[in-house]
Length: 582
Image (cartoon, rainbow, N blue to C red; front, top):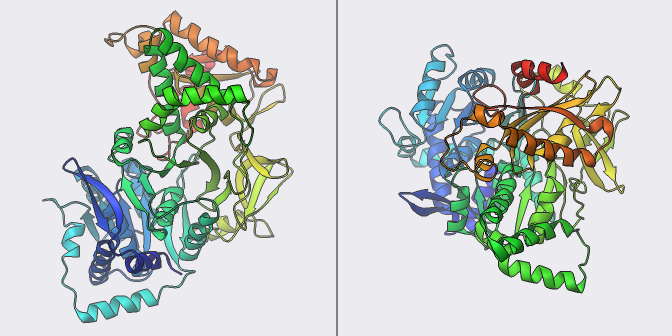
């Protein structure tokens, strides 16, 4: 089976069912599987006439929209390779990615991206055509291509192209995050994706009436795999307008399932805590008690009779409102991408929204997942996915082997071979262990773990995720390699600090004033003191510095997938670190 066979299958089984939903002129509209298939076929023929052949690289740079799916299937049906790029790449990364992947045709959203690719084309002659995802006056669009009038011979030609595509052929190149340098292109076959999508049925209990919402970029392998999974099961995927409008969009379409990022989950939890701070009297007391009560949740554990009665009360007054924030009909959330603190997991589970945390990589797809069918344990990423094998080296590195593996890095054969051991296990670069001989626990990236002068090894991600769950911390990075103690650089949550600590609703205080305010420094110190209670001396934070600006992709401090570029951040703020260790 090839990826595009999913569409052909659904166009036959569910011809009139909605495949995708999108908002246009302030109204939600949908396209059916039949319309989806017809547009993909027309676009495939147009691409062939434009010069696309098997293994041609076609790039897309856009936020999620049905046109992305139409293009995706159109590319794959010709045997070409889809290079889906992050829409938030800066100019340098975009230029590098198009050059490195040998992209010949590029589809973009918006005039800004079009102008950037047009500029890149001036020194990259491999780019033969640039098209827009929208009808516009400055470029030929995907809709112009789909107006191509095909003949019976064209249909026969497309059938021949599709027949020439084999399951083992490469269908996509994913650009890895590039936390330590330039991104690498992970080549993924039709077979790896289809096997992953089919195996997901063993994990998630979904049905025909489910509705999914999508907001994470489809250039991310996890979001894209789930997108195909939804299609395979005839489920309509609604595309959020943006990350800023995700909560509003959820309340409009009332999704039942979706892939949730730790950032979104924390946003909902923080919003509930903020709401508590605004209430008065008995209402505030009940909300606070309900939130504190979530800490008592344990998977498979039964509550006492009194606790069940209390939960029933809290459910009616508080938890029902939490579910309402996300539309009120969410059956479960699939989560991954970064470790989720146990307090966030307990918050959602107690509120009646199961969160199934899993672990995977672009190169391996899914490795492990917490789920009802196989078992759930907080602070782990669950039991191994179907047909996945792992082994843990003496260094603690997790190695993985499965049917879902990538086919190597583009134009990097020697490096690709070095990423596997003699038995074909991929070196993930993550340090981990098995809990109860069943549940995989990821400690952190091996390259990020550092040693202090006391000889103690520190996994910064564990500390960072704990601190980032605070109401008053937006971002942070832990440092301390070859130092006597560990420290942390913190970007405060200025909105919450102004609201709850400084009572500066009018916003007259500047960021620099806030990070030097004694009340703020005192509150942050309390958060660190509370953290230190639970950790050994070698893992305790002995110094911190507040920063006035957030870490951003544009400033080179975050990857497009929002991972920290540690070396760049520590170099940029080296003076702050010098002050801490002086």
